[in-house]
Image (cartoon, rainbow, N blue to C red; front, side, top):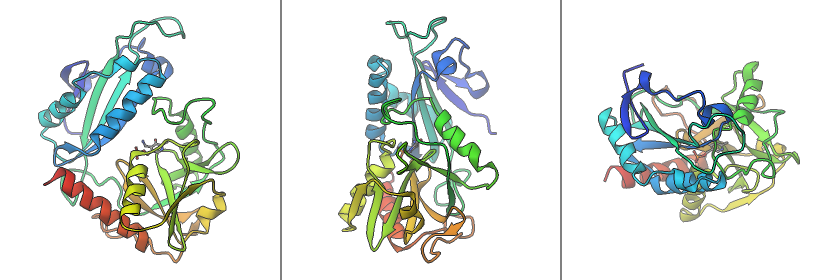
Length: 302
Ligand code: PMP
């Protein structure tokens, strides 16, 4: 990997030196909040929404004051120190070093890290994040319910998604689709899921999923281009029988799904492309991908 500078507790440090203490509660218990963002043209897309969600997660964790006021300038400094314009940007805020007890101390001295790596957009800037539509599989691992760990909070507790992804070892699929504890469709290990039926775009309602920022944006874009949107509780079969399907997250943006549980989606519109970002999905997926691209262009390159 190229040499990178990370931003740790207010300082730029070489990636190899960007380490945390074993008594850090983020390491000990997953007691931390994070955001994965994406920079285009050196600007972080949807920064305000990411910052708001990070603050909301910290509030859920009872450490609302942990997010530093100058977080955005730390991110900008990290991008600029690495001369990165097209990048993956991750921001983590842990409750910090507190030896001993599970019960958190009232005083919080957070560990704050910003880490980046190059990502490719339009053929420039590093590795493409995906070079073909996704194959997905419904797994046995259920989405942790809101009553156990609030689903809106984006914490370092990712064992749920890790266990789901481990189930894919046999099949080599790209994403694991989890059901909620009632058996309804929830989300992927690191993505939200959408499908299209007779021209209507459908996605599981909030309450059993992480409300993704990309999901929210796609719903807004669909409304703005006149695609009917419905949010509800769906049987997993609804996804398998859909005309089109795609996953969303900040780094994948909208990633068409080609196969679900071994079966091609719809008429098999999702195409592999030739590894340069030309892969695509069905007509509604492509309209939404174009709308998303236009928004990125307008916000980040104008
Ligand atoms: N669900 C889960 C469980 C995730 O980890 C992610 C990625 N953060 C998403 C959905 C998509 O969220 P976003 O669009 O904000 O990246």
